Length: 286
Image (cartoon, rainbow, N blue to C red; front, side):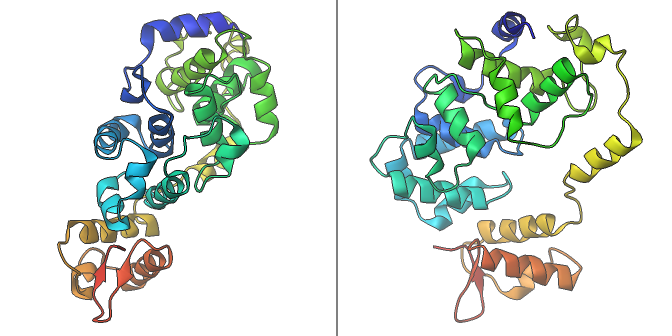
């Protein structure tokens, strides 16, 4: 892969995301990475801006209540991420966000991708950072496969082989951006890709994935409509909008299937995303 072509393309097409501004703290980068997991950056950006104004440091965020955190998280989805961020901030408090990957991994809610992203994109460590976008670009440009494989430990070593000695973090960001904007999952804009002439998938004649590969990929796609996750979101929306604890009747109207609604509510209580008081009313945790 011609890494310079990718970086040159990025120089022209990099999105002006707020966490890419000069002077963004390590906390700001960490926050952006957690918020952006399985959530489009267009939805993340305004929420990130609000959070950084309200809680510019981990110590500031550690002083928030869980109620405040969950209300501020809004509809970003997967609200457990918000509480894990809060736990992370409480552990950090006045300490700086670490540079070392192992120390980052020791923080609550910080997985391998996020740890590497903070080390790379904020601290400039030349380490591989592999997300769905990078995985897809590698599969097509290097392996000649339209569909990206499932995550594996081996992929870090493979992507690391691509990293240039100079400007590695810039290339890592560019590779991710290429997957997000051009080498997209369903309808890639191949004519606009800087790797068009070098792409293994193009050289192979753009073969379609087999029926078996398509079936496996379809299984990996997470549905939303009609799932417990959708019902959980509807219940959380009721609790976020309420100024006081709400009765069961206000929750019952959000979804017609009583068994599914009860299951979703029970899971929210179990996850610490909702509480029930002695009067049987429901509210966000405090």
